[in-house]
Amino acid sequence: MIPYRFEPTATAADLHDQHGSIEDGSETGKKETVAGRLMLRRVQGKLAFGTLQDQSGRIQLFAPSKVTPEFDEFCALNIGDWVGVGGEVMKTRRGELSLKVEQWTLLASAQRPFPDKFHGISDQETRYRQRYVDLWVTPKSREVFINRSRIVSLTRRWLEDRDFIEVETPVFHPIPGGGFAEPFTTHHNALDLDLFLRIAPELYLKRLVAGGLPRVFEMARVFRNEGISNRHNPEFTMLELYQAYADYNDIMALVEQLVEFLAIELHGTAQLPYAGKTLNLAAPWRRASMLELIEEKTGQALDLEMDLEELRAIARKHHVEVQDSYGPGKLILEIYEKTTESELWDPVFVTDYPKEVSPLARDHRELPGFTERFEAIVAGRELCNAFSELIDPAEQRLRFEDQAKLKAAGDREAMVVDEDYLRALEYGLPPTGGLGIGIDRLVMLLTDVQTIRDVVLFPTLRPES
RNA sequence: GCGCCUCUAGCUCAAUUGGCAGAGCGUCGGACUCUUAAUCCGUAGGUUCUGGGUUCAAGUCCCAGGGGGCGUACCA
Image (cartoon, rainbow, N blue to C red; front, side):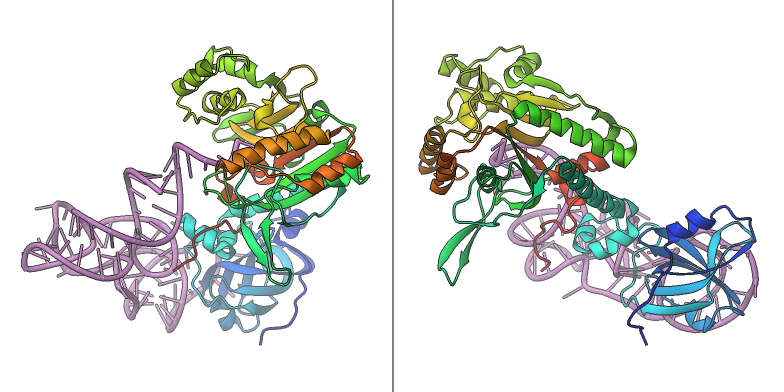
């Protein structure tokens, strides 16, 4: 009979912390109960050893036939069975801290055989499909997801300490907006209304700043109907935040401080191993404009005033597939992405993006044709995207209309005009700095993981046939 | 989407040139009172991803399909 409840008094880690230093062969007189899965078993006639694993780690079970009730049944437990065990904490003569099995109860039997106790699961597909097994047998897997939880929790606390409030905005959008991506579509039957799953919460969050909530953030699951890769899962988590009265320089300071804080909280240092190299996340991070960085990597000085044909030729030279609709700004961005982005290792704030490719960012206060936008590039990949927000409703309308033209010309990722958002701007949005940061990619950086599937518990896969 | 790789017992992996589908762990049965991936003896376990083809003979070669991985493209 499986009990309806069981109350562990300690975890494996608690026992090691509290009693790890006792003498070999000694007993503590302390009784504890633990619960978990039996991962190893060594039966030796009238004495049996087991290895119990719980969320914190492993503890040996010491079961002499004279002490352990229903000893034969205990020895017959299967690898993978869940058990609750109570007894005295002791250390064997060989020096292994153990719990003497004075009481035990089966909490769930493993009716399917557990993977090889030594090799675990090597097939990545099985690890993703059967995470409930992977978490037991792949130590790194459990560690990454525990760290993911800590990263999210620490980030919340850090933001709340700075007077940000967490909000929830709609996942169903009548108009997809706030980013360039193809949305998923769905339908509400009672309203007979087509809806889009959000590709970004951006436009709703800025409505809230206009609504008098000067510091807001959302841990937003967003959905993009795109290809799947090492860095892309169709649903992923984006932290977006908006801070009234701030500009993109303030947001740069916020990002580098937050990421450094997380690194130190998790690892005690801002120098982290990543992909076999070292990543230095210590603030301050380098700031450099997109044009500077392109010139640094390619030796080629570019600007928006260059002859379009000349820019196209340079783009082609760098293997950009040039399309007729590309203006100078888009060409410069494409050249940057082909030549420069993946070459950057330690964090860099790449600043001052062309206006043509930044329809929600405010005009640069000094550089015509550019915006006050930046992306943080870390280990050659985009970590976040941020800007001094465009607050002028008339200018925003023009930018939306340019986007709508692209959409009409067949660009499936272009934006459409959002009249209600424009109305909010018409009521007045103060100067605001905004940020979108990919939580999955941040977790990858902070846990030395190379594929997004290893930081998403249940990554999108084709269904099993 | 395109290219390359991969799929054999529950798990980890073998199988020579195309020549009887195997081992370890786990399961089941037995021995064993300080083991550490315990050890020892024994047992069962297979649509070799699927469907065709070549061949006396296919896990192996060919074609088509499916799953997955990696790269690339898309994804600012």
